[in-house]
Length: 395
Image 1 (cartoon, rainbow, N blue to C red):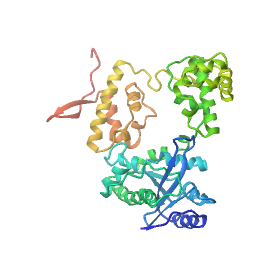
Image 2: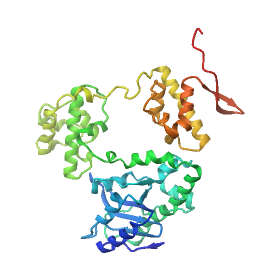
Image 3: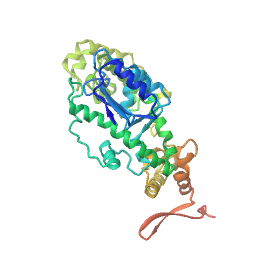
Image 4: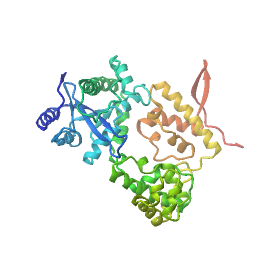
């Protein structure tokens, strides 16, 4: 494989992207810093089609990144391959307003190939290539320039290994017929909605025990205010105000700005500074949360009482058995919410009752709930066995 020197000029990047635009796939990775900023700071971009590989320096003066971004978000003929690519995809979305498409994530694919639910990149490389990675450069300061050869070699290795693993993984998926199992998961990862930040929705990420409309209305206003402040200052949300302080202010609102100096988690300066005034404006202008936005006390689990909870536990046991039998990560087959919905009597719009999930697990799950299957122990192993439908009481 041809390894290019670090790309820092627009003509070299444009030529590389022109060649890669004819590839079947490209492996993609990024290095970034986000400890001290709201937006992840892109520091390095790596890409390979298995024949050539390069690292691109987005911090290079005058570098035009548009050919690379165009390849990632507008070229539908080239598959983009990531490993645990959520944060890489977020960076591309922040730069373009679009997500890479079509895409393939090797961590998700590993769930269908009996390699666990969240296999790390080092373990993936070890498993498929027998290479033990040097992790020494993982925690380097990628924003500092110049980058040394060890850093660049480490970064490029991420995509050269990924480009070697992807065809092997694809062949295994073809042999097992499990490639189709991944389509929905890949499309979910590519959904731009995952990466859009709506200040009006930010309150839903903050833990709070109260379910009072006035408290939640203040929390919504405060979380939206904090999101705007964090974006404008390019600081992490917690650097503005921590979640627990936000929830405390929503639950026990100060009557005037001077009271902010007594709030745990805020410095005394808030009682007289501009940001404190903006916080108070958010509190004072907040109204009760509208009824149609109020969270349900037990969302998505209608009628799941004590008996339903026991049934859900049996379904989780069945899921473990079936996952073991077919060597697939249980999270790919079903999620806990779906099992609880099924136990509560829901029979529509459940992924486990559709497509391949129904064939592999959902049919048996439904039969268990409706009395057509039971657990049995044979030769010391817990198995499922078919049974007649249980008679109704007083039959």
